[in-house]
Length: 131
Image 1 (spheres, rainbow, N blue to C red):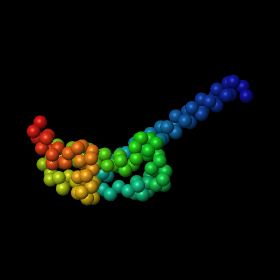
Image 2 (spheres, rainbow, N blue to C red):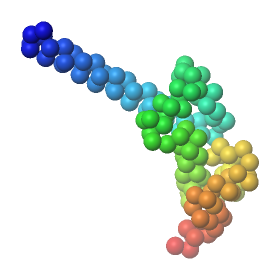
Image 3 (cartoon, helix red, strand yellow):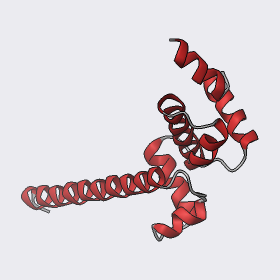
Image 4 (cartoon, rainbow, N blue to C red):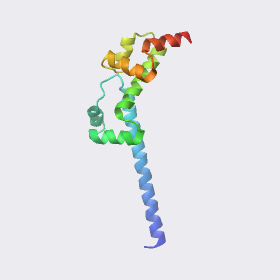
């Protein structure tokens, strides 16, 4: 094979690879947007996979590969961050914030919140009003 032919094939391969990364970037952005837009709803792997016409297994490995974290940890973190936003910017009750941020059980919300931030939602709200 001539050098010019090999170089042309290499360029085609590079362009195809770049296009694949662009498609992957678009897909992961679409998945992240879908999750963020639906945080207050029940988000199962099955539901998200169905939304994007991919298998649950593929979704989980694809998500981990592109974000560095599991799908569940991302959803949990985003829900907790939204809860903090609501605590700091509204007067809503903690039980309402739990529901609005997508947690199904108050006990899970309180446990996850305390594990993540080292305090309860009420303590965080109190600390923010004192500061």
